[in-house]
Image 1 (cartoon, rainbow, N blue to C red):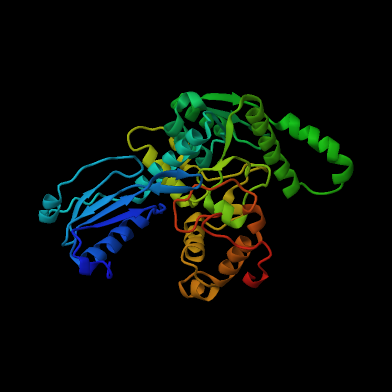
Image 2: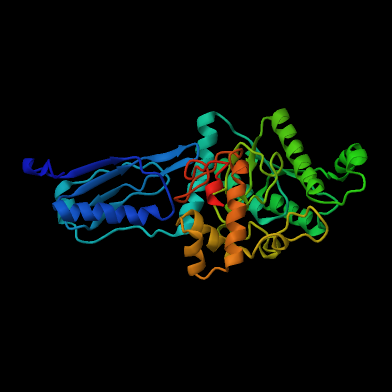
Length: 380
């Protein structure tokens, strides 16, 4: 523009493909306004809308008057065409900037991301494991909103460690959504595995290997349905779990698309509350109960991980804000917690390298947004 100004242009046009992040829209307006104030020209900012696998483009095109007033801000996550009179744009003094609620933007972005992924690939049907937990519940609702209830199928895969309320909660959610659900208890399959492994696992204690076998049985059954009936498996792992490796490769980390892999656990809860804003889609029991993988008796996530309210803050500062261990401790996080959590993040990069594409809603999604070598010894 500095070079074009001597030619006395009438307006500026910015044709953009600006990837979505939940905090990007506000920052974008600041950048646009700074340019308008610099050159005192009306600006037409035209942004791409739609998904390219994990990268989401949010639209939200903007018309700005020469004094920095937002004349119009077009809808997010949908195509839109509007025509403007340049003289009216120049004379506008009342701003029409849209509200930008973080969770609303994330919700709309994920629905668009799922829908575009399936439409562009010519796919129609999804499947996922419905555990009675918050993560799979949120993914199920998003899938229904993106593709319709007739295209969503879920499997309920309880083991001997699953609580009765988990099955009941999962069934209630499926009924609320009007989706097909099938109950496949896995205890007999698990016992068959253990009988085969008995000569080799003899005289060893029940542990992580036995827990992971359950998760992999579920993954195998879901993939069997996917192969047989053409339903694409959606991954339901959240960002907190992916960050610290709290998941089983070839088990609950299976899937063709990771829907909430860029949402921390606390954000998943916020999204669940948003989904229930008009009526109760996700049963209250699912939202209120303590999260658990239910792979051993009376298991709770809190047995293995710090409280999510603390963990997510620490992860955000390390991943999105790129704070060093010393800076994290200076922010008030306990030193032993910083060392433990950062070690978990760094040693589990190998798992993240093998996961499905993650729909990106933040500035640092795993995959496209944060590439790290697996053998990053310098991080330890």
